[in-house]
Length: 145
Image 1 (spheres, rainbow, N blue to C red):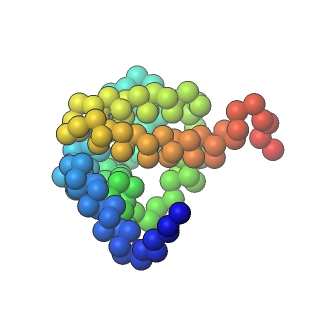
Image 2: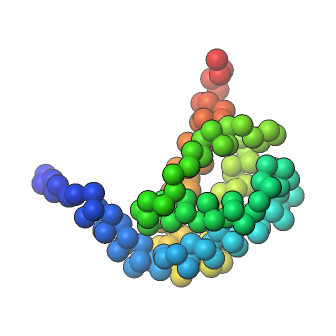
């Protein structure tokens, strides 16, 4: 097996080139975030959770655009701490993550240029959801201390 050593900048360029080849750029990220969180706000279960926590939607959407640009394109623009922000939420249930992921997938299927773009985002979204679920609820079947 051969290993190739790449600098962080080379890796970032590769990620950005791959994302661009899938039609992922700041314009797409903006459309995704605006469309998805518009749907979240209209969702019977998720809407009240988000609206109960977020006072300034334009500011929050700007942060989410930076977050998803960093996740999808290695843009390096997000410096927040999503785990503490989510662990303080009241009323969130484990199954809400499935609702969130389903809505995210449907939004991507509606607006993404292709199935590969949907898959690219969903792999990342599922990892993020799993990480947040673990932080908020621990491992299923194990008591939290």
